Length: 305
Image (tube, one colour):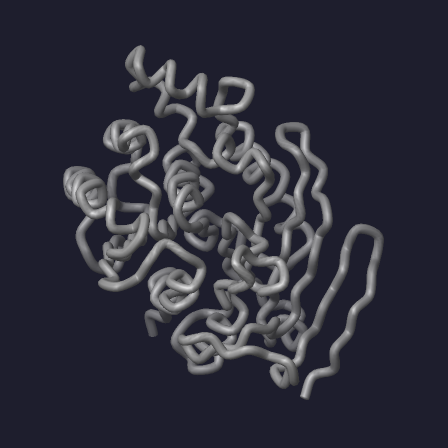
């Protein structure tokens, strides 16, 4: 049984948690609501582009055993929802730590470092694909003025924060494989949109986008126009999509079908470099995303030998 440790170093806190938490609660997928493994909380990474926010890093068990090994990295949006039910929306986390630990231990995926970038009150402005404004008509321009605080999206600055501040910090402080093929980004809902936008704007940085219950319906799907023009052609990238059929997710299928057509037109083939999965009965919530995160991690990190 691992010891439970909590200590603070400057703006950094490290928590090593046991799998035998006595007050854990089991949710319907059978995974306890708890924290598993080593989480490192960076309270604030300085930024010239956006409001600083917490960044949580999860390290695989083997990280301390092999001092020379380097690891791929997945950057997850809405990072407070990834590992800890006490910080997660509705009190249910994605169990990213448990899923990764389980799949690594069973030799189904490569060892990985998971990075959860927390959101702020500017989540909508930071996650909406900013260059989709190229396709706004006058009606949409007026809608945007009413919807966005300060009348403008902020995704381009948010991506600068990820690419020029967060990623260099992670690469400098952890043993990462910093190349494009080993740098992945993912999120749910608006987090799915910004993940695909990140891959499109920085195709040389991000090799894989993991888009879960992507919120295509915002501004009546205008982001599809952007992706139709700017999504990189197939060959150097991998993209995962999924969606459910209940609550907000039930509105996504017509838009996802359009996105799938864009994927085909760009040369992607269903298989190793692209998948779209429909999950009947799943709703738009952390409970559903938690239940199927194993599928996401296996797509991103499946072993090839």
